[in-house]
Amino acid sequence: MEFSEELKTLKDQVRFDGSFRTGTFSNIVIAGMGGSGIAGRIFSEMYSAKPVFVCDDYHIPEFVDGNTEFIAVSYSGNTEETLSAAEEAIKKGAKVHAITSGGRLSEMGVDTIKIPGGLQPRSAVGYLTMPIINTFIRPKHEDIEEAAGLLSDLDKNNTVQENIATEIYAGRRIPVIYGSTPYRSVAYRWKTQFNENAKILAYSNYFSELNHNDTMPLRDTYRKDEFYFMAFDSTDERIRKRIEVTQKITGTSFKKIEARGSSLIARIFYLIHFGDYVTYHLARIRNVDPQDVSAIEDLKKRIS
Ligand code: F6R
Image (cartoon, rainbow, N blue to C red; front, side):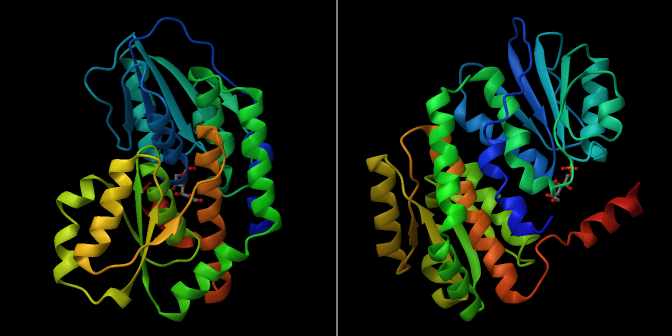
């Protein structure tokens, strides 16, 4: 499937209704790397009823026990770190679940939701995230439909996103994406999409934390035209003020990226897809294959 066609499957992915059955639990641990790991990061900003730990490592935290709902997320089902974390969770007696399209993870004998294969993991963000959201948040049907509608609109018209890609390319700039709660992980997702789709380095950070670090180099060190600064708009007045004051005192101007939709799930997936299209167009303009992840695959082979 062409990459542009992969992107267009997201509107149907958010309608994926898989979910896990859970009992009583005291915490949630979600393990996964890269395009699969983003599922846990996104969920962790949507849910705060119980502690959520996002694990992107070989090892799981010490607190994991029989009261932990542990979800291993790996599109291929063969990612070394995720398999290692899942094995440790099984040993510690956690309630282990998996989201995968196959591979070794699907053969571990844990409670598994099998998702369709044939996509790049990063293009399967809906399939990878929705089972977690469905299990613990149970979104309303109308919110899912709102998200699907907005994604469909983006599929039909992504000229704004193409223009941003053109500006980044024209100035050979490094994208800097600034998010804020509840879109911190979306900012990171954009960074990783620039990396994997467009094959360029990118940087992400989030308000208000970045005011305690990035603010210094922003003001003092770099030429502004070396970067393409983007900031997700916020509904929190304090964050909006920070965005304005940061621009003023550092002499930097941020391209404001606005979420659409009234439900959180719609706004999050809209922003994700916005970044999908910017990075897809940048890949096209740069004449690189957005699907190519051969260096990542090569690395996985050499260390296995
Ligand atoms: C490739 C991609 C990677 C993978 C990561 C983990 O599209 O997005 O970041 O997601 O290497 O592999 P999986 O997702 O198979 O566990």
